[in-house]
Length: 182
Image (cartoon, rainbow, N blue to C red; front, side, top):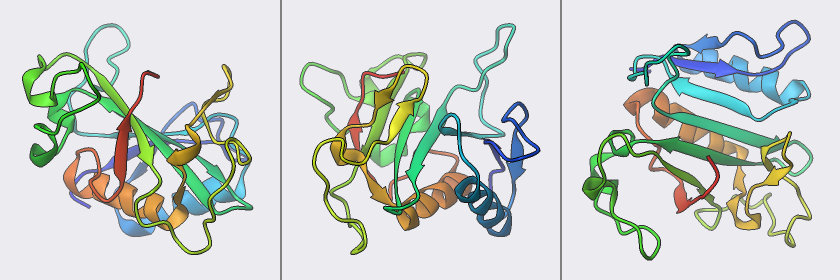
């Protein structure tokens, strides 16, 4: 991996207060195993360690990727947000939802948000579900659900996290849809 990732998640000894750094595929496998083995009280949060920060007293990163998983169904969904520089160059000119500018047309400081679009290469074990039959949450506290079509396989989740570590940019191995949740 060219970019280290900081991952916030829950285990018996970690209450997601401090990130765990992922620097290799082996680290990623270990972290994903721990995420799957322990109840997550909030979606797992991932940031690229060497990307810009917004500054201010909290010095928050300029981007974020978070995901929720459903263990029995072996599915996940990803929410991500960031400025236009977080998008791969080929995605910056894609037309977003009606009435919005492309990422290339937007000022750098403007944040955009996306969730996965699950119609991309569904794994055979991931079967389509009725709306909210399987609940995946963008935010547990507010009970904000992912759209029903945001589900992807665990394999796609892992592939997306690997790509994030390689490029430091929003993954291209999954399809995305605009989100109004930040």
